[in-house]
Image (cartoon, rainbow, N blue to C red; front, side, top):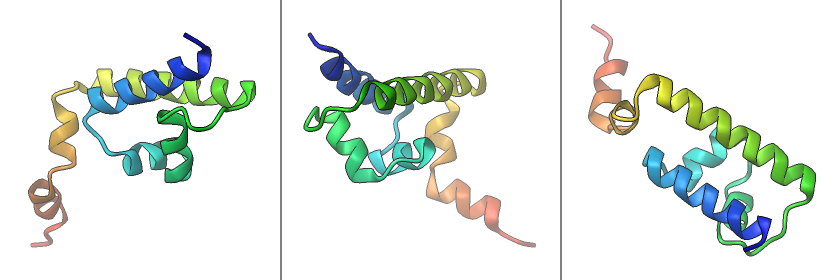
Length: 89
């Protein structure tokens, strides 16, 4: 398995574990959605610098999510909770 395939798998596992969409992960990583999709599907080969940057960002995101507790991730994206938090009394 080459490093590009493993990066694709890392991206997929990260999204699955966090239960977030490609759009949301792309925003967190400051990537265009189509670029993240290409990387996740191994349709495009990243440079060594880009692969390193993506891995560092994934590591940071995963560490931050573990500090918050993985059970909180789906709740934060729940539209009903967001509506309640945005409600002004």
